[in-house]
Amino acid sequence: MSTPSLGLVVPCFNEQEILPKTINQLSTYLESLVQSKVINEKSFVLFIDDGSVDCTWQIISEEQKRNAYIEGLKLSKNFGHQNALLSGLLSCKNKVDCIISIDADLQQDKRAIKDFIAEYNSGFDIVCGVRNNRKTDSSLKRITAEFFYTLMKLMGVNLLRNHADYRLMSNKAICALSQYDEGNLFLRGIVPTIGFKQSTINFDVKEREAGESKYTPMKMLSFALSGITSFSIAPLRLVSALGLLFTLISLLMLLYVLIAKFFFNDVLSGWASIVIPIYLLGGIQLLGIGIIGEYVGRTYIESKGRPRFIIEENTLD
Ligand code: UDP
Ligand code: MG
Image 1 (spheres, rainbow, N blue to C red):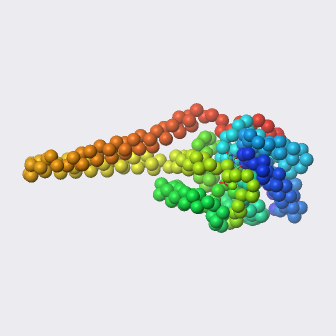
Image 2: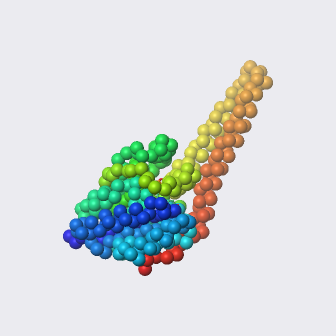
Image 3: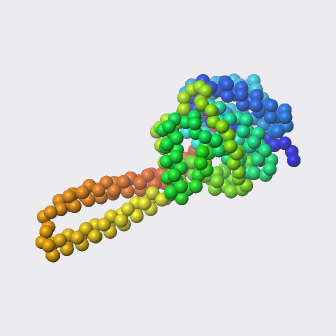
């Protein structure tokens, strides 16, 4: 079997602190893999500048001129991690045999790359990296992640636990991915639905060596919402179920009031039983409208079919 060519895809948002180190480490590692004939010399690392406002693009474009293994893609503004990643994956379509996506902060162990390639060589089209533990995460991130996985499972979406976006995809899988049109992107949910032969490998995660996490709590929350709304309509069903439940409860209450009036003539008591349901039902109705609104809003955005990313410069072309 011939040695495959590899495209490493690295989305970067304001990563000037760590980028020189990342470029150096990844290109040196890629070169060593080429020399040991794990991958061939058509391989490259593609850095995507997701609308950074610091020197990220200057660093990428200067390195690209010096180093044959480095390529760069500049987006016209910040489109967010998932869209930046997608722009990189789609730009590699038909240019290499397989791609691996990895973060710019070197938190994911790069030595797992050869394990990914070994899986690819044994015939897998999609290989997902699963982190061995979450020791390097803050406790807030750990708890919210656990809560999110459990919630998704309850809603019928089976996500691979502790798999982020460190994964290999063959060119065949990338071609399949390019047929997905959705703008509400949650790649780790979409990839399993592509099919083909899929497997996993394990890797270690380190602390971020420089710069700060680009995933603010707000970005994390919006990412989780994307995951839920793009894969499950369970929350909408929950609204209907709650509606039904409270209709039944209010019918029972009506029965109770009628019995109290006709058999015991005891109607003045029960202020609470009138006032509390008003607040409760008001709250539940607002919540229900909110959940429906979330889906309607996303359908509206999706219906516009706006581009998911806009490329300003691409050294691969
Ligand atoms: N990132 C991006 N666009 C964004 C936010 C993040 O391209 O709007 C990139 C970022 O540069 C990094 C990767 O996505 O390469 C993961 O982000 P980060 O390491 O900050 O997230 P964390 O590991 O803290 O979850
Ligand atoms: Mg990180």
